[in-house]
Length: 417
Image (cartoon, rainbow, N blue to C red):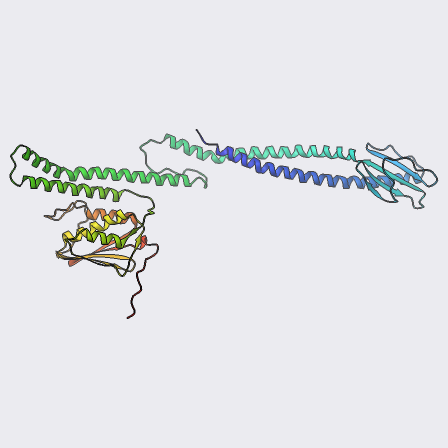
C-alpha cells in the first residue's frame, strides 16, 4: 500500500494555515467594515439632520427621504408628533437596537429636527458589503491554493524524476547515485543511499576477495590431506602418514580461521557502539598462551575502554602477539603508554622486517601470511594508527588508540615518593 502523498499533505497543511488566516482576516475585515460604515453613516446622518433643520427654519420643503430614514420635526408651539424611538435631548445622538437617531435644534430653541436611520437597513448594507468582501477574499484564497498546488508539484518534480531514475536502474548497478536537481531538503536521500550502496559494494568486494583467497590458499592443504588420506585408505602409507595428515588438517584449520578473520576485518561496519576493555583482553590473550614469555606493562591502568567490539580487538592483538612470538627470538614486550599508545616489541635474529604482501611468508614459516593483513584491515576500519620500527635485531609495532578512547580511564594515584 502506497503512503500518503507528500504534495497532498503539504496542500492540506497549507489549506489549514491559509484557511485559518483567511477566516481571521475575514473576521477582522468585517469588524473594520462595520465600524467604518457606522462612523460614515453617522456623519452622513448628522449632515442630513443639519441640512433639514436649515430647510425647516427657512420654511422650505424637505426633499423625500431615502430608504431607512424617518423624520420628526418638533416645534415649540405644537405637540410632538409620534416617533418609534424615545425622546432625546437637544443636540443628542441616540442608538437603540432598532434606530440610530440624530437631533439638532435651532438657535432660538423653537424648532428641533430628529432624523432616525433604521438599524435593520444598516445591517442589510453591512451584509451587502460583507458579501462583496467575502467574494474578493474567496478569489484570493482560491488563487493562493492554486499557486501552492502548482508550486508544490513543480518543487517535487525532481523527486519524481529521481524515483523514475532509480526504477530504471539495473539491480547490479552499485555506482553512486547522482543527486540531480533535488531540493536541499531531499538532498540527504541520495547521500544516504550512496553510503548504503558503498557499504554493499564493499561487502560484495570482501566476499569476492574471500572466495579468491580461499580458493588460492586452501588448494594445497586440501590436496595434501586428500593425498595422505588416499594413501592411508589404500594401505600404502608409511608410518608418518597419519601425522602428516593431521598436520595438513591443522594447517587447513588455521588457514580457514585466518581467512574468516580477514573477511570480517575487511567487511565494512557501521558505528560501533560496543566497548572493549584493552587491559582485560590483553590479560586474557596472555593467559591463553602459557608457553610464551610475554611481559605486559599496563601503565598503572586498571581498565581502558575502547570504542570497538571486543572480538575485533582480540583478533587484532592476537595476530600481533602471535606474529611477534612466532618470528621473534625472545620475550614479547607489551607496554601501554600515554596517548594511549600500545607498543609491542620483540627481539629478532638478524635484520627485522615486515612482509606487507598478503600470503607472504618467510622461508620455512608455517604461518598463513595473513596476520598483518588482518591487523591492517582492522586498524584502517577503526581509525587506529599503525606504525612499525624495524631495527637491527628488534621489531617494534605501535598502535595509536586515541581515536577509540572518548575518555581515558586512569588508574590509581601513584603513591607519594
